[in-house]
Every structure is written in structure tokens, then in C-alpha cells.
Image (tube, rainbow, N blue to C red; front, top):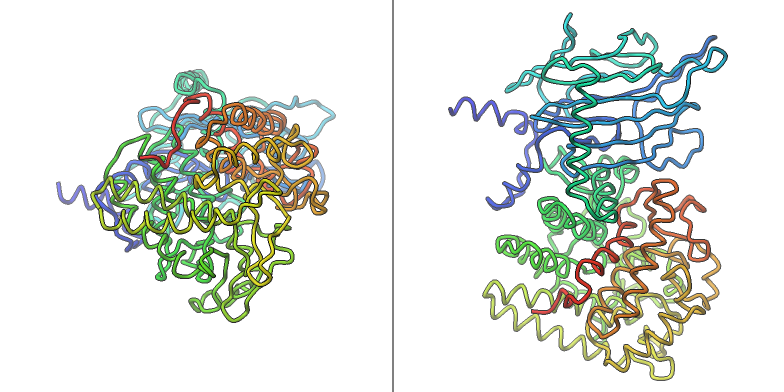
Amino acid sequence: MRAYLIALLLPLLSFADTRPRSPEYAKVQQRLCRGWNTWDTRSVTTHVLLPEGLAVRIGFQEKKRLYWESFLPTAFIGQMDPNAEQVFPGLHAFDGSYTTLTLTWKGQTFRVQSATENNDLVLLVTPLTPVTPDGPLPITAVFSIGFLWNQPGSVEKTRAGIEARSPNRKTSFFFDGADTTAFGAPVTGPYFAADLTQPVALSTGKPRSMAQVQAILGRQRAAYGLTNQQPIADAIQTVLGWDTIYDPEHQRVISPVSRNWSVGWGGYVLFDWDTFFAASLASVGDRDLAYADAIETLNESTPSGFVPNYARAGEYKSGDRSEPPVGAITVLGLYRKFHDQWFLRDTFPKLLAWNRWWAEHRDVQGYLVWGSDRHGPPEDIEDSARGTLQGSRLESGLDNSPMYDDAPFDKNTQRMMLADVGLMGMYVADCDALATIAAQLGRTAEAVEITGRASRYRARLATLWDEKTGMFLNKDLVTGQLSPRMSPTNFYPLLAKAATPQQAERMVREHLENPAEFGGEFVIPSIARTDPAYKDQDYWRGRIWGPMNYLVYLGLRNYDQPTARRELAGKSLNLFLKEWKKNGHVHENYNATLGDGDDVRSSDRFYHWGALLGLIYYMEQMDPAAPDITKP
């Protein structure tokens, strides 16, 4: 028995991750890190078996009648180059039991489907472009088999098919198609190949006919439909399914913002608030993934105690700056849904350290401000934003927001000298949620400590109310003047319950629903429509962002504003569906005038937090009368 267990663990032992895990969380990752799924961050057409790291990579070869051939080894969703492959993502079950996508490349289109049954994988590639005598030659599909991430194993071509051996398993691959030789394909291991004149199929475990493969796909497609009755839940699952990967460096399943970002950052990148929001999205259908995204974000905490702005492959992370504090409200929201006490125990220490860090390192004159510390670990040296005003802007998560165009910056303390309404609103909400968690865990002293901070900063936040404007406004801490520039973050005092009911009413009626500022068909612009920067429609300069809508929505749930809540939910959903139905895109941000995301190159086309626009509607439909997530 012991020898069997050692053999079973060998594939995972080739990577040494020293980060401690509670027994409960270790089981979460054990459940996640198994089976066939699109685990490889570098291609949505690669299917990998965990824990072995055994992969089937589907590549495509273009054939020419004369001298030139090209090969597509990997595929991504949302490529900006019009000559690159274009992927329309279809359904993707969290557990990989069913996936489908449509891929267009070199003028030809084909559908790629996968399903699992009894630990076996089946793949079906179907050409959708008719082959004509005077048209281009058919694309050749190449199914190459190998082991990823330097995992131990061997692969050989046999007369019956392909056979792969790992220390604890033998996997046989079989092909239903006119197997040919793709001489021009840059593939180094055994493969199957077939011209796409008709559907071709691969299966593991035993030979299967085309009809048998299609039957398995049909059953798993039907099973997927039974568990996803709400279309928006299906969309959220599809988004997270395609954006969830395996990180071999730390032996974990995580949901980075997109594959494009992850590849550009060496394999994965976890941004602070982005990945907390991924946890909330995952909670729609996968508790384990929701827990993993929250816990792994906290596990990136720096020695100083804060969750970094970014953490990327190779253990590189921002040692100078954090990002918006939405961790505790995320954790408490997950606990209220799934009720696992161990999850609170696992997350509380890091949440508490982070909460204390804000008060200790970002307090100026009793207000909270953004900052970027000049000191930091040596590996940060290449980060030119460290210790600068731009670094402080990056800590806000709103990289180029007009709110900070003229913000004063103290070079000695590396602090933006601007009392920030949005930061204080999120922080007080974080305190409220964390105090509730502390009480739930019986940590009475910490609960009293955190509640005291919440009260202190809520009182300071109240002083930023401007009666004339009917809004909470940022304050220049050098001149003492209030800033007239407004963004959705000016509504975040609703998260903190810092606004009186009368103030909340004014904020909603005079600003949120005002089409000249934040209302209208497409909501909520990241700067008021009356601001000169609105016309830029460049990143945080006027465009619509899912996280802003989501946080404003959570704030509205603290007040008797049912109409405003429903309108925000409905308009957010309509904006999300506009690109989702048309192109299968989930945008990082959207044009606030046109409602499009494809109008600029600075909006990733498959960035998971765009699905927060749908989550708002899902929450409203599921439980419109639910209390806010920070209440005991």
C-alpha cells in the first residue's frame, strides 16, 4: 500500500511547494488538481490530465499547393491580430467534463469538443468550412501526446495507437480518422494527424467509434445543461472554466484574469482584487475553485503583511504596493454561502494582517490614502513605478484615472496626499466583514480592535460629505480642498454604510441615475460624463468596468434602493450580453458611449471580471431581498 501511495504522489513531488496548507484546504486542491481539463495556460486546445501532466495538444497545419505551410501550435481566446486565430468560446464545465469552442484560422473554421467519462477523455474536431476542389486545401489537425512541466513519463506510437506511461498509470490513445503524416508540423513526440475533410476523434482508455464519441459528448452536454438552468450562470461558468489553469510551480489550480496576461507574465499572474472577484464568480458553481482563488490570493501576501498588487510566476510580486481591500467581504460572502468554518480559520490571519497594514502604512491625517513604498525586495528593482505617484495610482487599481491627474504626492513618504473616498469605503466594509469573521471564530479581542478601526474611519469618511454637491468627495490633504472629480468610487461610502439614508437618496437620484453623469443606457462610466476626461474612453478614463458596477451594487444593497438596484443589475447584464452573444468576448472594460469592448486594444477580450456585470443580475434574481454580505 505504501509503495502504491508513493507512486501515486510521484508526479506531484517533482515540484516542491513549501507553502503550508491546512488539511481541509489540501483536500480542496487535491480535488481540483485531478482529471482532464484545459489546465495548460498556453493553449485552450490543449487538454491535460492531472496529476500526471499528460497532455493532448491539438495543433493545426495549413497546407499550400506550392511552397509555404504554417502551423498553429496553440490557440488563445481574444487575439487582437486579425490574422491570428479567432476563438469563439463555447460551454466549459468547471470540472472539464464538457467543453466546446469554435476556431477560425487561415479562412477555415472548425469546432473542437471534449468530454470526460469514467476518467477517459474524448475529443472531436469537426470542420465547419466546406472543402471545394478550387478552394484551399483542408487544414490538418495534429493531436500530439506528451508530458508537460518536466513531469516523468514516456510516450510511444504503437500499431494500435499511442501509449503513455507515467510512474503510476498507463494511458492508451486511439484515433478515429484517416491518420496521416504531418511532415511539416513542428511536433517532437508521437501524434495522430488527419485532414479535416470530415470529423475526427480521439479517445483514451479504449477504441471508440465516431458514434460512441458523439454519444459521450451528447450525454455530458446534457448533464451540463441540467446543472446550469440560468443562462447567466452558464456564462459565468464558461468564463471561469476557460480562464482556470494549473500552476505547476505551486501545485495549485487558480483563475488568473486571462491566459493572455498569464503567458505574458511567465505562466500566471494573480492581481489582488481581480482574483478575489474571481472567487465570487466561481461561487456560482464551484465551491472548491472559489475557496482556492481566495486563499491563493491571500497566500501571496508579502512579509509586510499586505496582499500585493500582483504576484507572478517565479515568485515575483509587488513589494511596494497593494490593491483595493476587498478580501474580507469576499471571504465572508463565500462563508455565508457555503458555511465552512475552516475557511474562515484559514483566511483570518492574513486578512487581519492586511487590515492592520492599511491603518499602519496608509493613514495620513486620519484619512486613508494610496501609496507606493520606495523600499521593497530586490526583485522589485525593475518596477519603475515603485515609490512614485504612478505606483500609488497602480495601488488604487485605477491606473490612469482622471481623479489622480493632479493629485499631490509626497516624495518623502511616497504617499498620494489625497483622502480617498473609494479606499475608505472599501476599507470600512473590509473592517465590518472582518469583525464579523472574528466574532464567528470567537476572536473577541480582535473583533473589538477591528470594530474600533471601522468606527474611526467611518467617522472620518463622513467628513468628506459635500452638502452642496450631494456626494462624498476626495480631499486634497495639502490644500484642504475637496476634489470636484467624481467616479463610481465616490459611491463606495454606501459599502461602508457611512451615508445616511437621506444622503444615499441624493447620491442615487442626483448622480447615479442622472444620465448627464453616471446614468443612461450604458452604466457606470469610470468618470462622470461631465468630466473633460470622459471623452477619452481610455482605460479608467471614462470606460465601464465590471468591478465598479459590482461594488456600487453591493453598496446599494445596504439601503432601501430596490429600483436603483434592479436598474443597475438589468443594465449591467445587457452590457455584458452585448459582446458575449456577438463575439463570445468578456471584456476587461467597455466603451461607456457605445457599449462595445472591441473598439480599443486596451480591453482584454476574455478577462474574467467582465462577468461581474452578469453576477450582479444573478445575485439580484436569486435573492433580491438578501441582506448585505457584511451584516452579522
